[in-house]
Image (cartoon, rainbow, N blue to C red):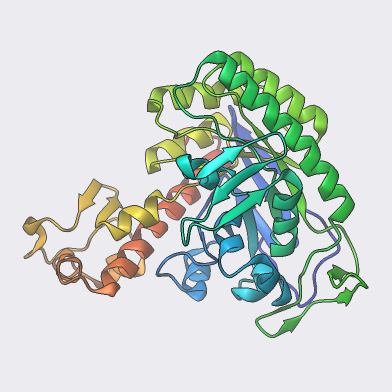
Length: 396
């Protein structure tokens, strides 16, 4: 199913549902950099890198789409530098699809280092304290410059808990920003900086403005984001009005901000009911292996989360037998594989005792191997989900 050629194909991102089972959908997200089978879990490559895992290993694991973050790439190395080097695909030598988050959630996380206004958000860098400003237009411009296949509107992520009026005001602001993001995108969507990737030269021409332009096709697409806090009625209104603006796909944002997991599920399920069936549905920033299966059964097509990589760096590993904290002393003499039901290169070669030793010795290899396993577990989980949907069974 997944294909790649030496030249950029003349297609924009498309979405095709191939089978359903209840609310769950087996689908394909077709991007200029290959087809992505959905439901899909997207590993987070915050700064153009999935920490500790080289790109060829990601390909071997079966990763067909990565998530990059505009906030971090904007600060370092800078959008213009990435653009000059062929966008993220050329810069990080990644021939497959990329989605970029607008940076709204990261700015939200800065808390005291940000100030939101109608025009946008002023924030201070977590690196050096320098002051910066994101508007819907500049966040979209940055993502066009980064050259991702799928880019996101700038939104305001509402804190939890929040009063009803605060949530409504935030939702209204996100809707106004979404309109501005789309307007800018429509005016500048041809300025995609795709150039050389891994020795392959794509057909680009340089405009008088200095931007790189594909010879054919509108090759990026823009997703809208549904907000509304934990209020089902505001979520419904946000979804309907975001759809009226019109986007290539729709994301559910503003979750995993401290609310109970049961409430997260409730909001996801109610919001999905208001999203179009012929567009991809992207749930941002969740969850555990059990949760991503549940969300896929509810009808989510795309998910991302830092949990598998972050947990790996802290020695927390996901297995078919439950979570394992490899740092525990009880694994010091355990010669068995990390997960006897896992065929990843870590479980096929190394013992729990060795992985525990690496972690205790603070070896860099510990983080690398742990991350490879956790990503493999998440990706295998999604493969099983897709297989179940194709067979007409509920994924477990």
